[in-house]
Image (cartoon, rainbow, N blue to C red):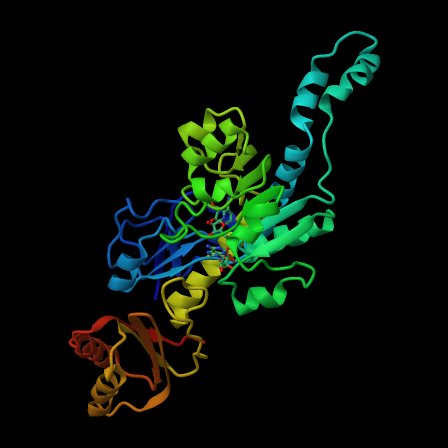
Length: 392
Ligand SMILES: NC(=O)c1ccc[n+]([C@@H]2O[C@H](COP(=O)([O-])OP(=O)(O)OC[C@H]3O[C@@H](n4cnc5c(N)ncnc54)[C@H](O)[C@@H]3O)[C@@H](O)[C@H]2O)c1
Ligand SMILES: O=C(O)[C@H](O)COP(=O)(O)O
């Protein structure tokens, strides 16, 4: 069996190399089995039911129409944590730039001329007085892969850190250092912090999470950082808070005309995950996840399907994507029983409205598999059936 993968955006070659050349082609067809993407806007990019899976090399997946994907049986993956260190390091750099006027000082020093440049710089340096991060309070909103690392780094810089994440996963909660106190409410983070940094996904609930009302609760002269997504912070309200002096500075990875034109903003061009290391991590992780799903039907790190991992030991595996309603397993296994197919192993998992059933069985002829697939597809609530052959 061969698979065709199509890529969008800059995908590190190390990720492409994960696909064996004898069983995969990359960017050779307009009807691919899978897509490997970064920030490509899939809401505006046509793709059909031929796409079995989409892997997003990176964290945020708001660029992918999840409802459409789930309804048509396209499994969507991301690569949790692959670029978290890259974002953390950039946020640390920005915190230092917010505390000390390093860039204007460098630009000023560059303009010096003559034999006494050293004397000139010594005389003028007091115009570039900064402050220290040590002892200042920072609120970290979202304590997942990125936020937990930012919180730890800020703690190591001597900052007084408070984290807020009412939905934290058990895995992230375990990983979070005991040194990072957790706030009970968003207000507790906003009220007293000198710096507030946001590391949450863009969702309908998180849209405009930080607007005029929340900005009003912040400490006068605070610095706000948004390295999550545009739209989580209301840019217009932020500009008004900058105008009034409520906020001293807004640092963001997401441009909008209003924010770009304001002189109290620092705008980076969506650079958080753009390091060689993060790009390689993400591309490799995404490609491995796709291979696992395409070759074994196993699902890990999906953002719209349940996790399903069953060792693929039998000669034949059937995977079925279907609606999550009663008696689906009964109807599926009845079809197999009527054909006298013995089930070696089986798993059924659901997530919201969707369910996934994996059935391992003894070998069947190509014709038998084809007929079986057709009959399983006659169950109206079955969305997709795949038959996988074990080559191990
Ligand atoms: N600038 C960049 O290049 C860049 C890079 C990586 C991630 N990101 C963005 O950052 C987001 C977070 O990345 P991650 O890898 O840490 O994801 P993650 O899923 O590991 O963590 C997100 C955390 O946010 C929490 N959360 C959700 N809504 C919240 C809310 N209203 N208040 C407080 N906490 C909330 C979740 O419980 C979760 O723990 C991504 O979704 C992506 O949009 C941006
Ligand atoms: O969500 C992410 O992982 C980041 O925003 C990185 O996006 P990029 O892969 O387009 O740089």
